[in-house]
Length: 559
Ligand code: ADP
Ligand code: XUL
Image (cartoon, rainbow, N blue to C red; front, side, top):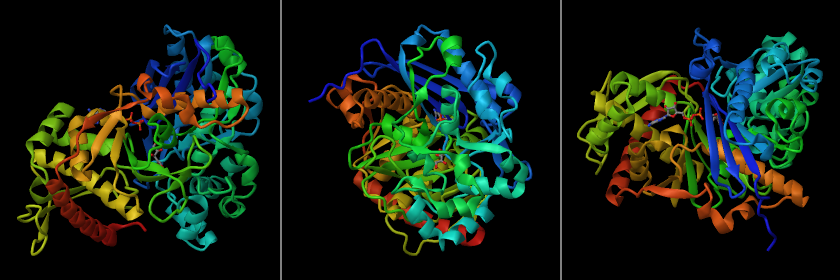
């Protein structure tokens, strides 16, 4: 068997430019984590005055954007911090990254020139102040493009037709509808733009000092790419805006080299001039890499700003439920995904309102309340939800006399509030009942095991509810708190490096299969599966939840 070990004394750097933070993880040549770093946008870059890394339009129209320059400044700040660490940045052989999906950046005409001639004595921020035709980047939380979504679906003859080609029906956060909105409402921004990047390809562009390609995995979150041929769909491009293809540039595999690191970083932070930048990709695809998700029956649940459920699929068969994306590590594979907007921020809201702003109290309440919550079911939408498409609002129901054995003859009534501990249990149980119901509806077989990741995966009380509801063991990454997206990006940096060295694609698992346990990539059992009786009782609770959810959709649903 070929030798896929990485050269000794080399390092691989992975970033994750997410909604709330920029993270970095560095792996050594044995794929062990040697360094992690975090910049929180709200607190480390307070002058942007973001809340959770974003600006929400106060009129409630669903517009949610982030300041593009904040991401630029965060990169310089992160590299400054890394350069102050023990790590010799000159030994980094390759860099890659992960970013929140769907967000878009609009480079002003002439910026390519600016990007390729950065002065290492000045900050990126100083030099890129005027590089964007709009300084506000729409992000994945935005849901102000319902009208545009409808038009794109119409151009394809329907939602399912669009999904079959691009991997998903038109979702408000997808970049195609977002670009269309900019073209329709700010035509001067569109015409002043020479390149549109995703957050992922934008960050890669900064690192190579030139426009980087959009990779196939993150590119499929745009409603613009044919997920089978991995080329732009002419029909979709034409439906969105004129001359779009030239503004989007090329598509490329996630494991391909974007370029060498730009002289700016060599001179300012002492990177080696041969350091490769591997294409960046979306955060969910990077987590597929970071969690080494390739075993059939493994399902990942990511509990970050968004909550997502994803797994590897061999056959792309998109339906209306959730997107399908090409895998970032294997050109033959795909990943299927469900996305919830109300993840950690909604849990924080309940924690702050009912649990003394403390995860310790939150967990105490969770442990103090019985499974099935005495029949209390809650729906908590702090922001407009994606799955199901419901507006902001909290809805609470009590099923009278529910013991979990039957729903026959039982009725429910709506209430304004629960007692504080029940609120906590209701938001946790509600979310995982919804995940179980929607994964079943998606045709995802019952998981053999769940791998949990994202900020809330450090919380064992939350993981216990997942184990009880899904009835399977829950694993987490070996080192608590490891960010699987930046870990995946660091691993992909190593993967891209090896593919370049060997001159062809090599399965990523060849980098670690024989030594997974010795790397930082292995997962550990965190919580054992719940007992079978409880799993079946939760099955009934789930049925009731879906019935109530359908009722809410009929009353308030956007689509
Ligand atoms: P993202 O990458 O999307 O920015 P993260 O994966 O870093 O988000 O997750 C951040 C979230 O993790 C925070 O919003 C916070 O609510 C949540 N979190 C952190 N610690 C805990 C905990 N002990 N219990 C539950 N949630 C937690
Ligand atoms: C995926 C999605 C979110 C973001 C969060 O479609 O919108 O999970 O990627 O960063």
